[in-house]
Length: 112
Length: 112
Image (cartoon, rainbow over all chains, first blue to last red; front, side):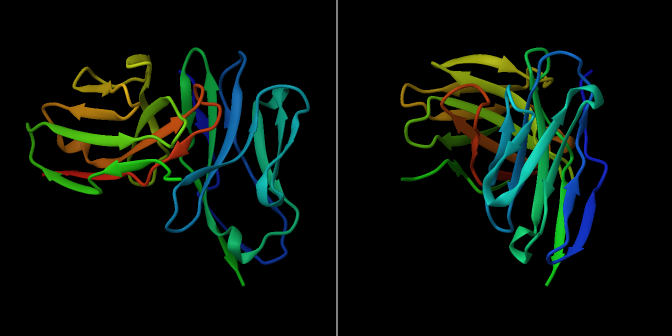
């Protein structure tokens, strides 16, 4: 069965540090990839998505993610985090076989 | 413009009972999907409705059923509740499949 792994459950960074959150999936066919974010007290919202084309995808608030097909990965990056990036981040993968599957999430805490 | 609204926000039921959760999609959206989110986990896809029909379904038993009305709003029904059904139930709406999901704030269901 297809799965999505987010190995970092909780990441703590200082402001201005660089961020990379890992996401790996286990399906060899065509996939669509997403990162969703949930800020404290808010709904889940789409951060960025990859469907096809340039494997480096840019999203809102300075986030980007790179799809590396050979590694089955779609890691989320930001060069310099802010306190307002404190949130929970979910990777999700869609395929025609397994529909949409979300990872278990990574909680990001930013020290001011 | 109202986003996705869900009702009720909280619900307490006992084992064996039945429950109905409701969702109104974001204006302009015609597709509604439902998710179960257990504590510390990511959302798990239950099913998706489009044009009043269940279009896609995840790995949930038949105790979980739904409906979509002509105004695109939707209901999730769960029969014969089990303790393990205790979770946050999220509704998301979209224009097409899973391309960009807009989530509601969820219904917290507790089964005692």
